[in-house]
Length: 622
Image (cartoon, rainbow, N blue to C red; front, side, top):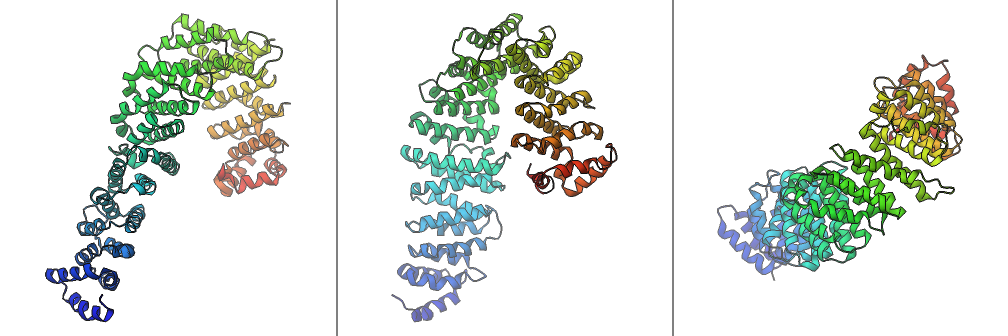
C-alpha cells in the first residue's frame, strides 16, 4: 500500500514530467495504478481532470484502474466528454475514451456506465451514444440483465433530431436485441410495449426520426414475431399491439423490407382459434399495414380476404367483426376484381339469421360500397337495396336496441348505394323522410339521407335542393331518431356550402334547440358548433343573429350535455379562443349589425359565470 505522503513524493514529480512524448512516464504511472488503484485513482483524478485535460493520460490510467474505476466513473466520463471538441461521431477524442468504457467489466460499474451514457445521449451528446454503441458491440460483457432499462432507453433516442444519435441508437439496440435468447425476448415484450407507448405519446403524431432509419425495425421485429408465433395468449395480444404501434409510426421506407416477415405470422395467427383480444390486435396491425404499404400486400390478398371474411363472422366479439370489416374495406385498394367481395358480403346479409352478425356485416358492406372505385353492376346494386329493405320494412311493436341498430345500419347502406348511383330521388328517400307513416322506414330513410350528405352533400343539394330542403324541415320537428339524423345531414350540407350558407336551413337547425327532446337539443348544439368551427368565415353577422339567441338559451340549460355543446358553439361563434382582444374586435363588429347595440351584451350577461370563465379564460382549452 502506498500512503498519501508517498503519493505526493512519487506521483507528483511524475505528473509534472508527463508530456505526450514521455510514454515511459505514463507507463510507470499505469503500473503503479494497477498495483494500487483504490488509493491512486481518487488522488490523481482532481489533477487529471483540471483543464487542460490530458485525455490520453486520463484514459490510459483509468483503463487500468480495474474495479476502482466504477466508483469514479461519472467523474471520469464527465471529464472525457467535456474534452471532446465537437459534438460529432468523428471527434478524435472518442477513440481515446473508448479504452475507458471497454475497461468497465465489473457488476458495479456496468449499470453506472450504461445509465450515465444514456442520460448524456438523451441530452444530445453524440460521443456518449457512440461510446455506448461501442460498449455494446465490443465489450464482450452480457448486458441482458439490463435489457429492461437499456432497450427502452435506446428506443427513446429514436426521437432524437440528431441523425448521428439515431443511427448509433438503432445499431446499439440491434446489438442488445440479438444477444437475447427466446425466453429473454418474451420477457422484454412488456418493456418494449411501454416504451412504444411513450414514444407514440411524445411524438404527438409527428414523424419519429428513428423509425425512418433503414434498420429501425431490426431490434424489435424478431422478438415481436417470436412472441406472436410462440408466446402465450396474453403475450400474443401484447406483441400484436406493439407491432401495430411500430407499424403506425414507421416510415414506409423502413417497412418495405419487412412486409413478408410481418404479414406471414399475423395471417397464420388469424387462421387459428385464439381469443378476441389476440384477433383484435392482429387485425388492427394488418389494417395499419394496409394503410401504409397496401400494394406490397397484394401477394397475400387471397389469405387476407379469407381470414378477414372469417373474422367478420366471429360470433364471440363485436369489436373483432367491426375491425375485420374495416380491414376488408382497406383491402379493396389492392383488389383487381372487388365486386365479387361485395357480392359475398351481400349473400351473408341475405342468409344470416343472427342479428348481431347482421349488424356488423351491414357496417362492413357500407364501408365496402363507399370505398370501391369501380362501378357496381345493376344486379349487385339491386341486391344491396333488397337486403336493406329486408330489415327496415318489417314493422316492430317494441324494437330492441339491436333492432334499432339494424335499422340504422341498413339505412346507411341504402343511402351509400343511393348516392353512388344518384338514385336518391327515384327511391323516394326524401318523400319517406318527410311524411312516411311507418316509423322504422322513416328512421331508415333519415339515416340514408344523413349518409348521402356525409358522402357527397354537394351533389344531394345541387340536384335535389327543393326535395331535400322540404324533407329536412319536416324531419327536424319529428321524433328523436329522425330529427337527429336530419340535423347531422343538415350539418354536412351547411359545411359544404360556398360561398354562402343557406339561411332557412341554418335557422331551422337553430330552432331545433327548442325541441322537446334533450338528445335533439344536444345534437343541434353540437351541429352548430361543427358548422361554426368548420366554416367560421361563412357565417356573417346576419346569419349569427339566427342562431346565437338559441345557443344562449342552450348555454343556460339544466342538462350538462346541451349546456356544454352550446357553450362551445358560442366560443366558435365569437372567436373567443383569440383572447380578450379578439373578443373586443368581434364584439364591436357585431354590435353595429345586430338589431340593437346592446343585444350581444344582454346575451353575455345572461350566461352563467361558468360560461364566462370558459369564454374569457379557458377558451384555448377547447
